[in-house]
Amino acid sequence: MFFNYFCPLIKSSKILSSEALIRINNSDPVQFFGVNNSNIQLLQKKFSQTKFVVRGTDIKIIGTPEDIKSIEEIIKFMEIHLERFGSLTHSDIEKIFNSDLQENEFFFEDQGNDELILLGVNKKRIKARTVSQKKMLKSIAKNDMLFAIGPAGTGKTYTAVALAVKALRNKEAKKIILTRPAVEAGESLGFLPGDLRDKLDPYLQPLYDALQDMIPHKKLLDYFETKTIEIAPLAFMRGRTLDNAFVILDEAQNASIPQLKMFLTRMGKSAKFIITGDITQIDLPRKHTSGLLIADKLLANINGIDFIYLNEKDVVRHKLVSKIIKAFEKDIDIEL
Image (cartoon, rainbow, N blue to C red):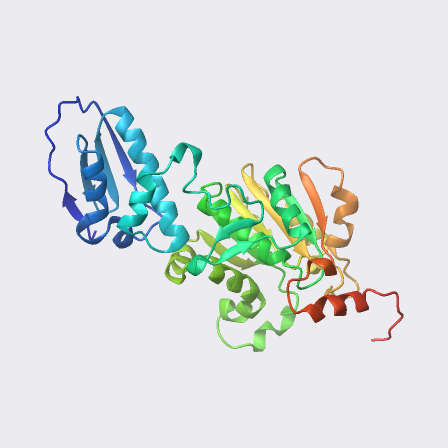
């Protein structure tokens, strides 16, 4: 590996009776360790009675149990800060040193703010902007499965992706899985150029767009490469058990009843599921019934599953969009 640095042995009046090994798995090692391991040297200065040995992406700590516990907490927050903001400066590390980590005052940017979900790329504030979006935040904290149903432009997918990224950053999930039915593609995939991913990417683009707002580009590519974040068509979920994951099914109105049942039964023991859809935009062939249409009838009374319905009041796009939605919701018989 790139790093092969040994901090000098510190003569100590304390007994270095414990040791721990920490592996930096999810962070860019160059940014995490700093030039010539300068970030680790800051830790060395703060914990002068502790020995640090850095090799590759491993940090071996030899010191008292109390110091080791504190260092492990600091390193965790250093990783989280790097994931969240895409950088880790000496000033950032000093702020972590001076924060009450037990109270999470440095880490949780949404503390005391029930609207802010997370800080995205360039510290963009990604917030729940409507009543229903705020309900989504509260609901997923209490329930393991959430259906968010509403028309286009209500921010249901964007909010769901933000909640998934937040869970990943907070170590509440080990991976994110985003999926959509590729109904629009159907049999027409064959004439599109490229491999399967090239053919399907246009249908998954809204998910990519949301992620690019929330995760720095290089980090996002790393997540894709390590499969920490997966984006795939719904058919690829068959046969899997999705555990320790935050899973989003987008455009669920285009999942048939058997497809929706297949997806929902992929849920592992430690997973969160958000299902989003718009029942006014069903693209299934007429002989197929949308699974989303009957989901609330079958699942509404199951503890741990919640339904939130968004409407034109939740539209966060151009002001005309809500008026268009309202117009199309009128009970008018239109021949298409």
